[in-house]
Length: 309
Image (cartoon, rainbow, N blue to C red):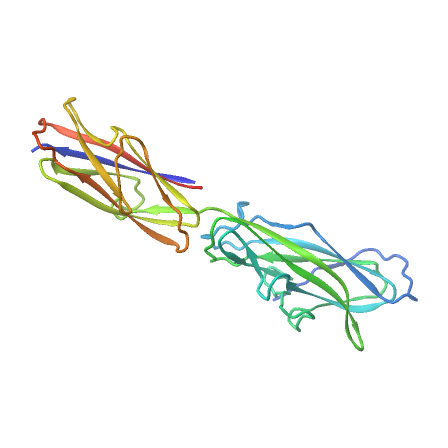
C-alpha cells in the first residue's frame, strides 16, 4: 500500500435461529447408553467482507460459518452444547502486537455461545435431543466486531466446544473439540495534510525571493496500523535548479525533527502504531548563499511516498 504526494518548489532571486439438520436415521442400539461425539471443520480462516481479512477501518459486518456435526449412538437422550475460550476467560485472538476480540454465534445476529463457565450458562447453552437419528448438523458463525484498531499481522486463537448429556443427576461431558480461528489483519494507510487541500496530492510552494532564509512548514497526518516508510525523492538531488542552467541553490528538509539532504532519495521510518493518528512535522529549509545568485527562476519537484510494510 502506498501513496505519493508531490511538492513543487519555486523561487525568484531578488435474536437467534439455530439451523439443525437431521440426516436419515440408521439403526441405533437403544440398549447402549447415549453417547455423543463432535466433528468440526478445519481451522476457521476469517476472510472478512472483501476477502482481505479484518480491516480496521471497515464497519461492514462479516461472518465465517462453522459447520458442526453431532454424532449419536445408543439410546435416546437430551443434550446441550456450549463453548468457552480455550486460553483465557476472554475470547481473544493473539497477534504480533495486540489482541483481537472475536465471538461465536448461533446466528449472525446472535446470541453468543461463548462463556468462561465450563458447563455454560442458560444464555450460552444450545439444547437438542436425539430420539434415534445418528447425526445432527448445525452451523455456528465466527464474528469479529468492527472498530478494533489493531496492528497488521496474523491473529490466532481457539475456543473449546463441548457436548453435555442432560442426566437427572446433572450434565455429563461426552465430547469436546477445539475450534481454531485464524485472522489476517490487513494493513491500512491514510495520509492527509491541511496544506494540500481536500482530495489533492500535489501542491506548489512559492519560496519568494531567495536572498534570505526561508522556512516552509507543514504537517502530515498519518493513520496506519503498520510500520510506514516515507521516501523523499528530489528531481534535482536537493537542489533548486536555475531555469536557464546557472548554478542552483541547495536546500534541506526536516522530517519529524531529522534533517535530511536529498542528493539521493532519503528514507524515514514510522514504526509506532500504538495510536491511530500520528502527526509528522515537515519543513523545507532554504539558506541563501554567501555570494550572489543568478537572476531568474529556481525550482525543484519533490515526491514523498508513504508505503506500509
